[in-house]
Length: 547
Image (tube, rainbow, N blue to C red):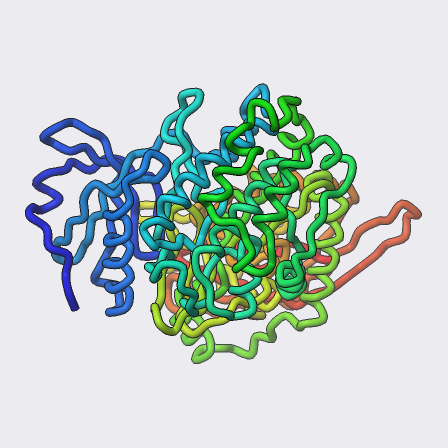
């Protein structure tokens, strides 16, 4: 395998500073070049964990990025291989995401959307001229160079980018983010540069009204929509959009890739190149409000890792539990489905879910030719070898929750020390479980955070079977779902059974009886058998909600 030749060591030329982001096999940190004082962003890849194909993909990403020098593309300045690590030194972009900047503006019009898509198309045209296809165009990869007004839009993250032969079409694997995938990719037809234009069409649609053209909770139905090109321009929000803007979207979202507009042609479209006279200057307040909700959902999805990554990271844990299982009965599909239905209904009725749908946001790849790719910094991007994209509802039924203390963290005082007798430890685990459920029932997020490790990972029904990482998702749940449900709830844990797994982990199973009073003062009860896990002295049950 060829290696990237470098003339110097990273540690000799650069000084590392704070962390900016993290992926499965990499971390991004701010760095300064010692000789010039210039700031950059260093993507540090742990090559000890990479397979041979991962190494090939890393070399491909570096090779592609070295080719691209454009004001609307995050530029690679250096690629340095050291033993055990590979350093990619990029532009340090400090303006954040384009979509986040838009919702902070006091004024946003169709002409502004035209200017945004113009810069995006400039970057896409540049990479297509170099026979590169990005394959993962989406809001998370559209950044601003700085926080200054009028800062350039920069296209980032070429981890899924591929090299093509001119306009030749070929099958390069199933790659991309569900809501932005083109019909030809979903049909598993040969594809090429037009897939990026389709994604640009989806982005432009969102820029104009704040929600995506294709969406469904069922990923299979979402893909059917995309393959059929089933989108429209509903009233009243589209009534104020100019016909020229709709025309450009139609040309970008053309099902037949051979008839789809190219980046070069789109740049010459009147709505783009003559925006001052063609695009409307009217402030689009409804778009800004919808886009704000759209961004909130993207951030929520950004905290959720795909179950494919979960199966990889937790295979050892599942193996251990299978070996040491103490007859714990998992949650049944009927119970899980009823809880899921209740949660989905609640989300639909809440204000946060009333206007803008949550788009599928995880990037997945089925690519036997290319191997695997871990999560990247702009989004929880996951590329899995020999793995097809599945609906979020198709997640593992193991509904386990893992919570890991970081180095130096002390477990909460409520949990017994491993030196305590087993019976005492089991009682403490039951006690902490009851306190945690009580915190949820009371909507007491402060109490919840005192019990839980801030870096916890968990499966929650509200996350549609995906793995949640950190506390952001839980905070969103407390602030938006629990606040909508003011019914008194009483929860009782029945027949708790604790199985200790070594000195620092345990599994608990119990039947949870949830009772609430309806408006007619009738008592409703529901019971669920729920497992949970204790690791590193911090316990979190696997599910928060009863029906």
